[in-house]
Image (cartoon, rainbow, N blue to C red):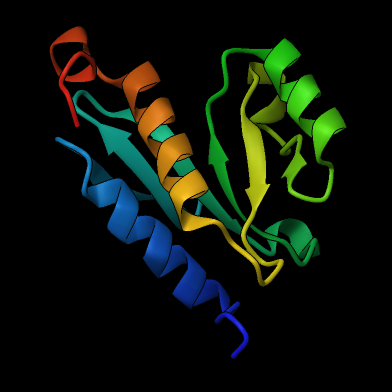
Amino acid sequence: MRADTRPDSLIDRVRTLALALPEAEEKLSHGAPGFFVHGGKLFAYCSANHHGDGIVALLVKTSGVEEQASLIERDSDLYFRPAYFGPAGWIGIRLDTGDVDWGHIDDWLTRSWRASAPKRLASMPL
């Protein structure tokens, strides 16, 4: 049985994982779901067919442009430099390939959440 690659279904899976993180909330940002942590800091963003690119992806923070470049070099079928977010070191992770590793997505969401959360939250065991 092939995985469900409908954009709404993929974003719903991301939503479930993102909103399970402490003090996470969802807000529409430029018409797409953005996930924020205490104080309104963005930690993840969903992109679905942005400017007609046909891609459904999760955008998350990395440690910077060096890590971003390394990820893209290592696996350009999975990772890409997203428009607008890319110059700040964010990475795009494709969700529309039909073979999503949801544990990997959860790890990236948690990592990005920790990078955005205040210290009292970021140091919490999850």
